[in-house]
Image (cartoon, rainbow, N blue to C red; front, side, top):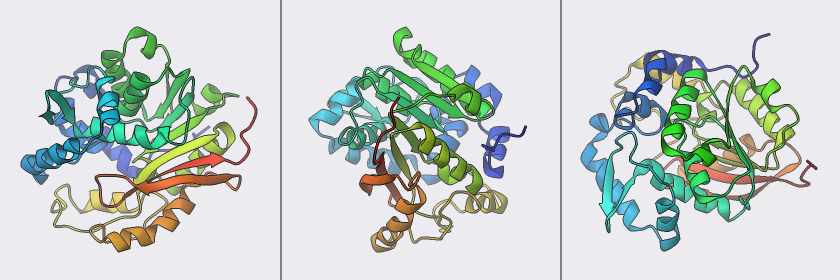
Length: 305
């Protein structure tokens, strides 16, 4: 039977052209190469390495002591040769800077000690890496497309110790129902991938979260944008068309206008609420991207395990 959790045309194209089977076999430079430009950061060759590092430096300089402690607990961050800056002797890249900010936001609402975590669309695995580096989780399940799952498995095997890696379960989209079974999770996580899925797939995942989880952290764009000046639509009109057809929020937003972004927030909060028995416990701007928002939802009455 065809899985109800289907990839969008956008991600079928990405899996075919960029996040291929070969990526997981050689991690040497993938963070500064084209696979990670589809997973985590835009290609700085097109957008300017100077600006990327300047942004990163300024953001890192503003981190507080607790964030630096979170960062230092995440070992082996240099795997994959990321674009980095060094502050007071500590190297930091944009991926893990975001990871510690996300973790800070989550920790204000969720007790992660001994938590069971489910992540939908983990990219190369930096959120899993960050959480396991900072908390003694009971387990971490990752659901993803096959090629991306191979990459996260390879990356996490290279960065986690044996005890941490043993807590991670990798699930392809075709295995979800059988693999999850009666499992319950304290927290579900989605960062910048529900926005790249077909709407029906998004609704299926929200239903899955409603059935299996007690809290949900989401970080995604508040809408779409058509500002060609940002990258010249360098990948072509067809790639732009596919991106505009995915996700639950397809309204075009002026992402450089704070009021326009703020006006889109209520629809964001409604779109990512897993069900009627859930409430938004916290939400806010997701630094540094102008049009990204984050929220933690909680079930009003957590189900018994």
